[in-house]
Image 1: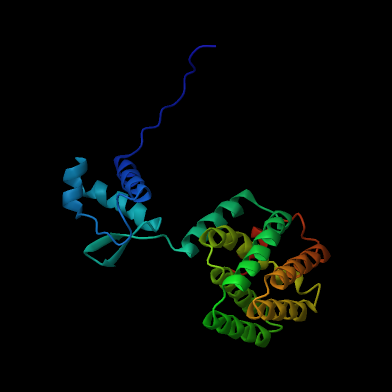
Image 2: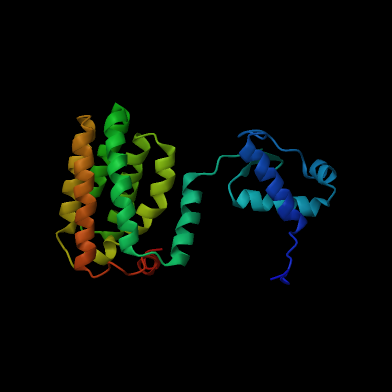
Length: 247
């Protein structure tokens, strides 16, 4: 067929600098906590102006790959999970993912998170989880507060299991799904009590170090949430529509 004519896009110099530094961070050449050279030194290293270096560093800061402990020091950082979660959540929002898609994934991740938590939990972690559950119980009837505490509860369960990959994978998905609670509660007033009951049993199973029971109650909890989604008629609705109302 021959060569096709296509537009060639040349990356800006600041993008190339950001990509090079990011590559060295991912390779391990630059390690978390390591201080980067000053802008003047980097400008000489890369053969560009200080303003070009500064623009590349701004991009890395926005990505959470570098941070400034002081105005004059720039160090390599590990991106915080909430930043990564926000970025993934925005991508899913643009894709207009549905409650059905979110639920299918959340069912698996929350079951695994509960199982791992029961296997790995320490006494102080269980105490913190109990405290969160007490706050949730006290927020019965308050949708906004319930959603906030519910998200913290499930994130804490995942952290107890000490699997960072699971934490990264589940956070943005669960965040979008569970915020649908505000749309479900008006159709299912008893949903508050059912949520409290499920959380209580998950906490009890984790405290008893019973992974099977913890996994079972996590499954029941997420399946119950799906029944609420169905009653509210949200199965194939884009979850992002309902997130905006609570932002």
